Length: 152
Image (tube, rainbow, N blue to C red):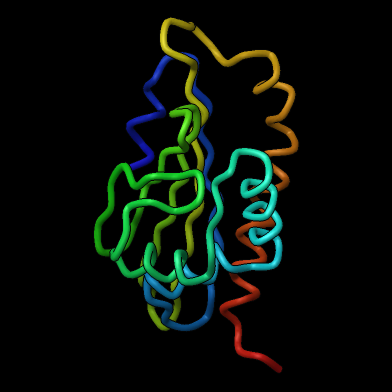
């Protein structure tokens, strides 16, 4: 789903991957991802800066295909094992996917930042924030994986 943005002129795309040593369903992954402490901080920021509140129940509804809206995003595309979300400004995409492996699950998280309509590339602010975005993306995936691991 995210792959179509790799051919958009001037767009940035990334994909981060981790493996968890047991089976995880797609709804479990989506719910875990959007309810980590790190993502809850982002949800709080979105609530007060762009007036896009969300709850854990909203995340659960998104995970179980009961809604196409979550915080600042709308579902652009979904299947049984992946989802592509578009932000309310249509500037970014967020992608989650699970892939079953033998006795394990591969978790994917990717993003696309697309140029504004009529522009040939990303704006200077977007380019400046890419380093932060890359670190933040790795942390989001790490926190989601950690949330899925059994408590010790």
